Amino acid sequence: MKYWIGILGSLFIPISQAGVLEYGASLDQSVWKMTTDTPLECRLEHIIPGWGKGAFVSHAGKNTNMDFELKPLRPQARIQTVTVRSMPPSWRPGVAESGISKVRFYKQFDGLVNGQAAWTMLDELEGGYTPSFLFRDWYHQNQPITVSVSAVGFRSTYQNFLGCMQSLLPYTFEDIAFTILNYEKNSDELTPYSKRRLAMISDYLKADPQIDLALVDAYTDSMGSKWPNQQLSEKRANSVKKFFTGLGVDEKRVKIEGHGEKQHVATNETERGREVNRRVVISMQRWTPPEFNVEKTASR
Figure (cartoon, one colour):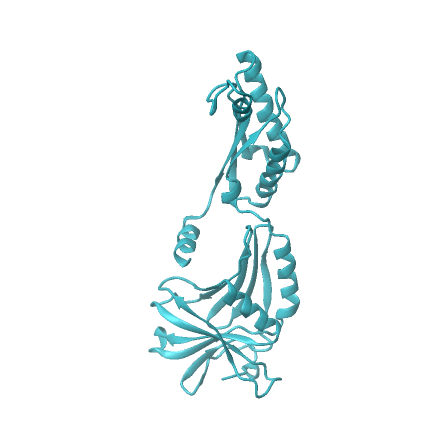
């Protein structure tokens, strides 16, 4: 089932062999490009002429993750099962094609291959093989169709993709969106654990421009007088803001407020309770386009 379209030059014409409509980049059309290279997302894209594009995507987080998104020019017209296979390169005659996975394509959503199957596709491409999607095309009277991902030009850009993955933050927005930091007694000095946590939040703030506001609310225990405690809470809130802005975060994205000894969350009768009450609460608001939310939720 291997095919070449290089003889067609830059003009793409789908080929039909034995009743199968085939789409894929020719030798001179095959391009891989890093379209996102940030501590939050790595995206490696490939154009499939006449059909759409595919992309390998990995996101920040504690767990290793990999997706391959297959985005057609025309939306999926129905739900169907798709076979993903690996086709051998022309310089390995006699080698048989092999199966990678079976996936579901959902109506009105991009195709998605995730987890181990996506990693297998990467390995096959690195070895010069061609991962291909086999299904029936509603737009061509249910004719069998093969959509192929070319290995030409893949290896050099793949190294950049791996480098990007090594720089992904090991936590997500959900991991740091609401954080409570604690202080040493009678001080605006954070505890060692809270300092590490604050550094994590700062890294994420710098990397994610969609976080439009970080709210910093500071509190004290009830030891001492109310007015000094109010001033201390404001000092603590300001110290967090200075930490953020000192690392390049726009001060307009940080809003602070000191609450003094109000809103205790534990008893002030014990040292442990007072330690819990000496705190700063950081909560972040993130703007996300509605269409992104809907598509991601449904496609996963």
